[in-house]
Amino acid sequence: MRAYERLLNYVQYETASDETSDTCPSTRGQLEFGQALVEEMQALGIKDASMDENGYVFGTIESNIEDWSGPVIGFIAHMDVVQDVPYQDIKARIVENYDGGDIILHQEEGIVLSSDEYDSLKAYVGCDLVVTDGTTLLGADNKAGIAEILTMAEVLLNNPDIKHGMIKIGFTPDEEIGRGADRFDVKRFGADYAYTVDGGAFGEVEYETFNAATAKITIKGLNIHPGTAKGKMKNASLIAMEFDSLLPAKERPEHTEGYEGFYHLTDLGGTVEEAHLTYILRDHDSTKFQEKKAMISQVVEKLNQKYGVGTVQVEIIDSYANMAEQIKPHWHLIETAHKAVKAVGGTPCSRPVRGGTDGARLSFMGLPCPNLGTGSHNHHSKMEYACVQAMDDCVSVLTKIAEEYGQRSK
Image (cartoon, rainbow, N blue to C red; front, side, top):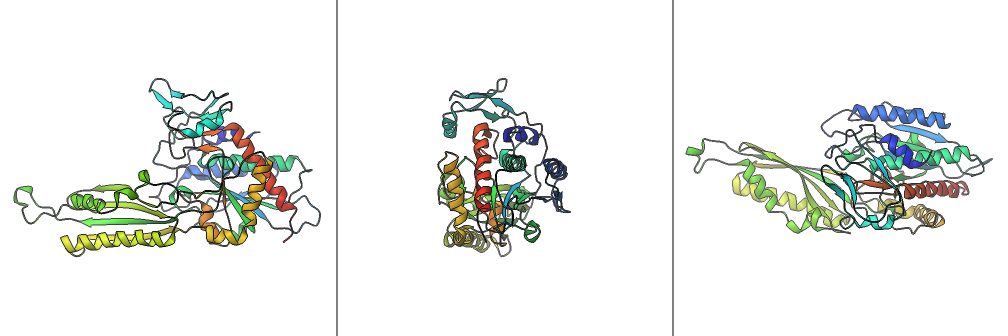
């Protein structure tokens, strides 16, 4: 089975994670998908495939090299998708032999995947694309990665002439809500090194992520009848708007790229009596990252001076750190991935991830874990798509990496 065929199957599982849930995984759909993956892995011949009590799926492909004693390599992907884009009743289809023009996703609603707006399409003229009807996401983030890992597993298990060492496979829940590594049992996983397969274009080899935090702002107002409000009312919603106005407008996601960090307002709600804002703070540079957290605190202090102590309260929660410092001592991971991409006929590309992966957290938990592309684009969007042939190439890259580490000694 090819990777895209697995993807078409996997996207039928509703696996959005839910940050308001206190269970692990946060949604039942992830458990159902995880169990299906365990059964598929066992059918492929991965005898120890299982799902733990927290919804993490693990399995092992044993070495087929006599007296092998090299490093154990792992491949990891996440099962959940984002909840804030429609994710139910996904209608995926194949656009064969893409001609380079606009793709009509939904004729009745006039939904179009524009070749002018999405430049990545230009690389896929003549290829086959997996798209939706434009009313939901696809779920290639990260079901394309799962599909490629298990297709690699099928290739290795069905072709004993491809020599490899021991390989570990792991599928995690709740990555999209920042909990993917929370209960990942690194010791049980048993790999020396790993790759997350959770990127975009084929050829991506990523080892730099943002430093990340979440700032939760609570504003206490004072409500009173508007007819007698002069000098008394304190409107929490208006103070929330003022809070946002005091942050640098040019440092929002829609105005930044490359190594530029941002403040991103993800949630806003309130009444006169109480308002809430949630920001995610991101920067590759650790000094600038700390400056962003300090800026949030300075705005809180300024508004408390203006409206009274305790009016604005903040909780800043660190999410993950830039994994570059954990990867660089193990540079063979990047060199091996670059070599594999070239062997498949691609051009390796290492640029900063404008986001994070499970690997960012796992790298600080003792499992150095850069990220690889999946041949998919426009994640977290109704315009999400994947390229059939690029997914095949990604499978070949994983297979080459497995072969390479099979030839190494610890």
